[in-house]
Length: 114
Image 1: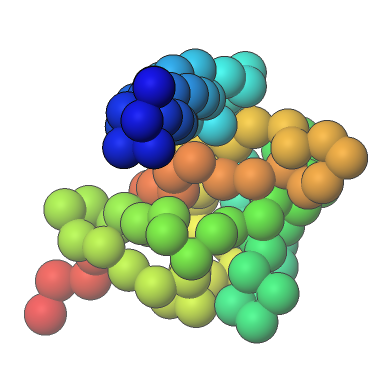
Image 2: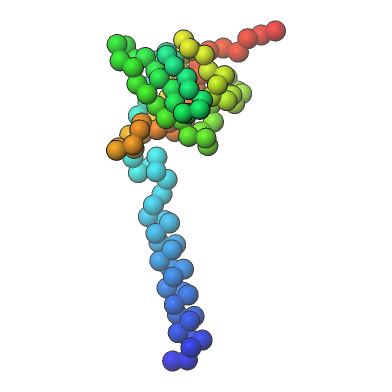
């Protein structure tokens, strides 16, 4: 087999392996068990990108990645627009041994009407 033929075969094999690997990975949220909590914001740290939420008698710390959009009504807000005491609904997954990680965050407080 010529060098061009061998190179073409190697290229096809590499493309097939890359495509099958990407297909098998799916999104991380799809692979992990996504859970939902609702509670009140106790602490918001936009530098560390965490929200501490009180759910009954427990406080749960959730990491909020940059790519996550935070919804309040029909608007998207930054993490530091969430206030202590806001009612939140957070979908997250356990990235053990890493932190609990948000998939989506909804601030249930109504927007102020001016």
